Image (cartoon, rainbow, N blue to C red; front, side):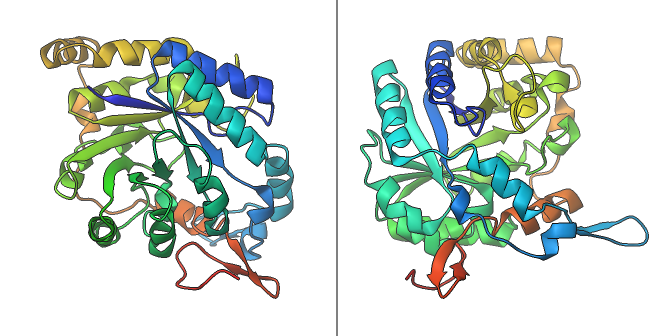
Length: 323
């Protein structure tokens, strides 16, 4: 049966009470895994070309605008300590769901990896799918990997599969479209078929707009045989955070959990009745990245890094030792 990963992301707004409420609600509504993000605002890098961005005369965006000061200020209000990590792990254990995280900077791996994770599974963000030095370092602390593949070229994904096999680590690839939100036509769910040629377990990390599309793409992915579904999750009553618009609520999580328990025939009957246009979500199994995905890759890959000494940074993909 499909496993559901609930991504808390930054919808906790840095508030431990909200953090706890989200874990409790996710557990009650059918989550198997609850995932946090090990983001530390001091690891944010200042890259001058994103201060103003660049738009060509014809209106084509060449570089997105994301000023460092505003992003640092936003993230600093969301920082979680190692004590918050311990609280998260303990709360998940208490409620019977599996805690998991995503680490965004290599130098954080030893301290985060040493915590009392009951299942040594790590989620790797799309933009680090091809950060091979980081994957090697994670392998010293975690036994199983769930790796999103959005914004990555086919050859990069293939090389990552080869690396994981050489490290002797079990791994799942999640198809993902790194546009926030993505439309139904952008889903390309048949991409899971290609990923399954590289690893037995695959899934779908869904960034569709909840107000417009609900849990349509996640249901279709389950019907198509996804082993994992990852969805952002919120307990907010309105769009209070940056991630709320692509986050499902407890009722939608419960509906998704109930749907995965149906037989394949029942799932297909329900899909064909309620989503007659569902085949538009299939798209292509091999495809070129869109301009929007390339722009997001350009910014988010390198958004966080590790101190390299003498006021330099070491990025997750660089073959350099950390000082």
